[in-house]
Image (cartoon, rainbow, N blue to C red; front, side, top):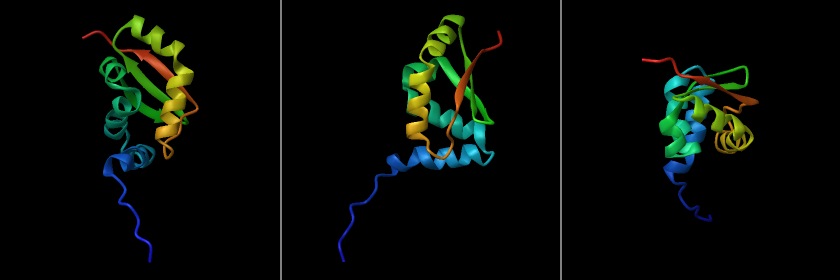
Length: 100
């Protein structure tokens, strides 16, 4: 019997969290996934609120960041769908976070 190399746990995380997000345990799972998939800088300026009917809803801290992320939607969407196969999105909707 041929031995298989063990799968690193970190490589399984996006799919596991994606399944949780799709199955309704969403906000916490999406929140854990977003900075991991999009990077720390984008993750610090935005956070996912939910995945509804294929629309990933993301709250953004400032109007300038919202404009920047909207301009990069296609790249961000491609990254998301490549990393999180069990919770794919058709599009990303960026919303400005309410003032504190």
